[in-house]
Amino acid sequence: MISLKNTTSALAVMLLVTGCASKGPAQYDPEKSRALNLVNATGIESTLKDTEVPKDTVNTLMKSGAADAAFAVSGFGAPLPGLGGLQTAGLNLLSTMFGPEDTAARNSIFAWMPDDIAGNKPNNSFRDILASALSQSLDDLGYEYRMVIPDHIANVGFAVFDSSRDCNKLEELSSLKEGCYIKIEVISHKEGSAPDFVASNGSDKSYIFEGYSINHTRILFKYGEEKLNQFEILQGMSKHMPKWAFMYLAPGKTRIEGEKKLQIPVVLDQGKTLYFVKEENS
Image (cartoon, rainbow, N blue to C red; front, top):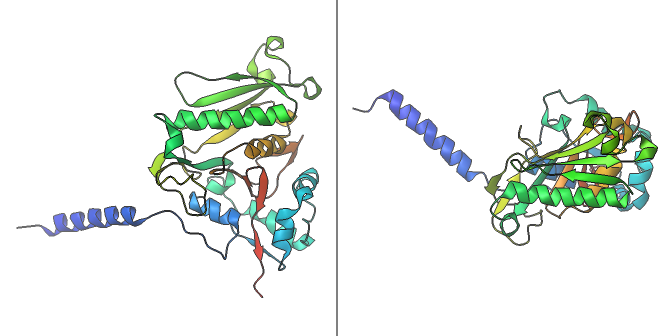
């Protein structure tokens, strides 16, 4: 005789397995911005939402080459091109909606790495790609640096030198904590498929580095964080990242200059800043 308890347990397991198996890559929602579609695809859903803006201003905003630089210099507080003060305030309001444990309240790197690029150690492969992108960003910005790659984990550190920013060379320091140090951590991945709206080199299989996981890939300004323009470095790094890798920057987590920080959530896509905006419904 089969007990009701065992039958119920078996059914629960079957439903769980079926539910997990049926969940495929995210589908693009044309009612949402590309930024929101990307973070939803990687699991950073939370309370993030789009701010509605007048028709035709979304493309103007995204195509404006000066928007990123001018808006960053203003501390992400001045109205964006094509947006009024209230609409920009709507973007800023998002920063007050995240709890400390919210996945949208922290910076993260997320990606769908094609199988043919991953090799035998996907974490190490992704680490090397990110390290190369950061190196090129630091080169573009004129920084000197020294890279350190541990043998046993997929992390990499960059000791950054710039006398004008009081970032001294290693031989002048008694401890790394006295200098400027950036660290990339690649902790975990899973196998799956990339969404149709994310370029994946035509590969059916991808190694997914999720943005919502507690073991999410991250870049940390460990020491001397107040001395560096973090947004400038990260935007430059994003420019050299592959088309299947992205950065999510949370409000209040990325310094621009000194104590000034980015106040709105954005996604960096190959150097381009994607905002959480969409056209108003007519």
